[in-house]
Image (tube, rainbow, N blue to C red; front, side, top):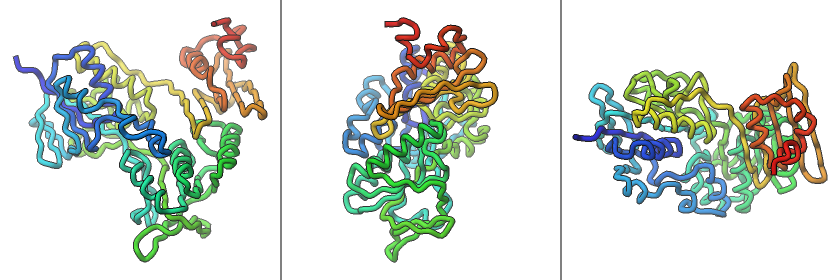
Length: 407
């Protein structure tokens, strides 16, 4: 009996994790074809920063090499962007003319970097920080140029700034907000982080809005102009101002898109033969950009593709654990706090440690840690499970081992 055909569009971390889960559940069910727009096998995007600093190479961060696909009988088509889905004929069309029929289709098209719609955005020397090609361009530019401006004070912006500084560039970070990592840290932790990064030579221009990127006669960036008219000279501009779900392919196919490819709790789109996972997805109105939720989605999609029919994705309670240029930070839940909450804080400037725990109705609802994140996982479990604190409350700040007697 001929096997059903599964086509996966997207060879990133979410789509490939779904394949791994599927093969563990029902390895012989499908003939599988994978389209990857990049010429590289699946690699860990989280580890692009060490590649930028020179600590690692692309080979070091590859998760599934080409042999992995070959060993499992998967047809891997690299460097082939899919341009059209013919839902009536159940076919996928790639830019090079390749046509692949499907019985089930999994979309894992990821996201695209946001490019500010300002004059000069297309000048040479204006880059984003999203894939290995971006990293290679940044490394090449750092070898021949001296000054860089990074637009965006989020995680990617700070990692880009640190990587370029490591390669000897003078780096300024431009941020529209007043604090760094404003989605991951409260203002106190953000100020600590800024001070540490300034001590390493980074410059921060906060509450600045980019109005225009100026070029020279050769069409290369030479300066950045802010809304207040001030200018800063630069040889390189990195835009790290966010991502948006890559939904163009799904939209052209007539699938329902609303801030992402809309999926049900089974990761199905409005076409029951087409599933979607990862950063391209909108589930219950939320698009996730963190790895843990994407892997949870992949597990559910694989469950249904394997014909188990029992998986359900109800959304994710997220936490963020980062190492920002060597500094550990962690946050989860409502770490800002508000009406009806109480905050427990510890600040040890000598050790470079700051902890804030937010409690409401005898439950931990948020945590923000800087410098010491060892108990982040425990705090996250308490938040996610809604555990009543009781007598734990007064010992929370001491960490799991001392508070619970765990060894």
